Structure formats: C-alpha cells, structure tokens
Length: 348
Image (cartoon, rainbow, N blue to C red):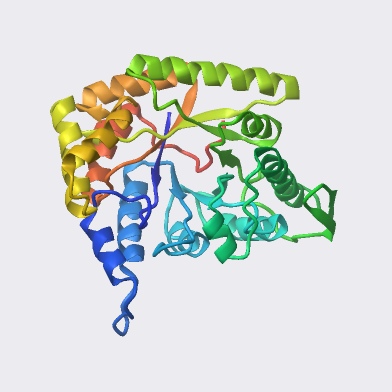
C-alpha cells in the first residue's frame, strides 16, 4: 500500500489554525522579506510528510478564493522533497494540453520523486468563466474533451513530433524537447464517476480514485460498493486491453476509540474553520467515518489491510493536517506497513 496526503491550502485543509490565519491575511500585503503563510505552512507539513514515509502529495486546485495557484506551489515545494511524488490537479477547459504537457515535464524534472497529473473534470461555471475557460456542463462533451486532453498530453510525452486531430483539440507538429525524469512518463489520475467518466478512465487513465454513494449505512456496505466499482472498471479496461490501478481517499483521524477520534476531528473543524454548529459538522463527518479510518490505530490498520486485499494500491488521506498529525500517521500507520520505498516511482 502507498500513502498520500493533500497539500495544505485554503479550500481542502481542515482543522488548521495556520490555514485560518493565512486566509485572513491573504488580502493584505506581506512584510518585507516575508513569505505567504499558506506556503510556509504547506512546506513545513509536507517536508515532514516526506520524512515519515508518505509517497505522494496532491496539490489540489481552486482558482476562486485565496488558494495559491497550484503549479507554482507544486514547483516550489515539490523541488524540496526527497522522495514524495508531486501530483498536480488540472482542469481541462482552463489549460491547453500542449502547455500542460510542457509544464508537467518541467515539474517532473525538478522533483526528485517525479510528478503526476490529477485530471479534474468537474465544472464550476463561475470559476471557468472568470479565468477564461469553458465549463462544458454536458457530460458526454466534457468527457470527450477530457479524453482528448489526456491523449494529447501522453502523445506530447512519448512522440518527438506530435500531431492530433480531435473534436476539441488539433495539434500540428508539436514538440517538447524535454524527456520525462524516468523512462515511464508521469501517470494520470482522475476521480470521475459517471458512465462517461468511467469510459474515459478505461480508455486513457492510469489510476482511478474510487468513491461510494453517500447513501451507504455501514463500512461493510461501503466496501461492497467499492468492490462493485472496481469490478465494473476491470470489465471496461479488459474491453480496452488496458489496466487501471485503484486509489481511495478516506478521511483519517486517530484516537483512543472511534467516538473520541470523531469528536476530536469535529472539534478542530468547528474551532479553526469557524463553523458555529458542531452538530452540523458531526453530521457532515459521519459519512467520512464509514471509510473506516477514523478511530484507534489498530482498527485503522485492519481497515487498510482490507483495502489492500481488495486491490486498492494508494490511500490519499484527507486529514486535519499539521506536523504532529503527520508524525502520528507516519508512526501508527505508515511505519507498521513498511512502505518506505527504495525508489521514487509509484509504478510496480
């Protein structure tokens, strides 16, 4: 099993006084010689995560709001990491794939652990319109565009001169003159769940982030849902003559028992994210608890073994991230699984 972490930023990091302070200060100029607090906190946490054995960091992207732009942060932090792979979220429709192919190989060569791309096909109309993109709300068109987007990126990485004629992208005599860090180019992750999204993953994806319906009532039911999704994807990839690897992103919080672990997560979110109603936060957290990674360490380790036995190869943890949290997960979860790798690639 490999383990991942979200990079700390305004829209995904919960339970953090440092992020709350950084958001408040984002509209003000910095003192002479100072750096942005989001960046300083993120660097601090991820350097520790790299040290304790995490394998990959996802730099999620949100253009609206006070988040620092992902490509810049991924380069600034990823180049400081010794082993972790840097995964960057990319929205087709906001970037041209030839430009992403160039930026990706640049980042790949800067990061000792290499890089990966997380394709985000969700459509936030306001965000796309503000930053000059096209949201494309129709599922069929959006996934055709995303499929072409990935095909262009992979073609640019593998062919010295690349040409492509698609519905949404046309590329003529494009060349990068950059090789990937390793013989195997960066991998493509995505989390699409609709029928069109699953077809896209089967055709061109390398990793699929699994999810489960919010209607499930137990951890066992959640696992059965994941197993059904994996069986469906294996059927689709068999038809394509391909394989796709499976990842999952449960929320993790450790405690002396399940209830105290849940309550401590609720308390941190309520305090630092300024949600006034802890009962609402608790209700919001209950579906996350079904992922089986909120509770005492030995219980979480058993759950992770169940994921491993199912064929899931990467857990990208959602968490209330701080250096102490990272150290605890390194000690209680990563170290017992013996996952400190000898090579930097996630590839088998």
